[in-house]
Image (spheres, rainbow, N blue to C red):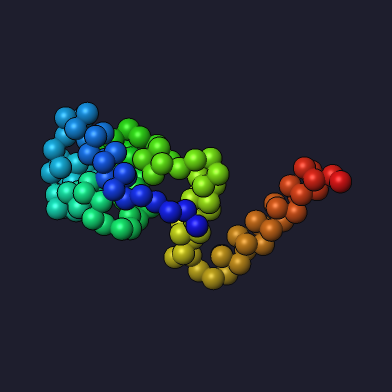
Length: 117
């Protein structure tokens, strides 16, 4: 499990926002949040941040999500998997099953290609 430090994330948001000469209100308007939400994110007072919000903030601040979240290559992979899983949550179950089947097939193909023992 990736443990994110929301105080550090908030500090990075604040630093990048100020470097771009944006107010909290301006950032909030650009990402579709309230000014108080931005303030709480910057203060590390919100212990969760939806992937969609992270992506919107990063786009406005010209920063990669992995950089904002302080992810290393090791835990970035885990974050990417979590993002993929959350992106299919609202799909119908038959589509999810089909995606899972395809994913398993891809894994098996990779095993054959890269793990020739």
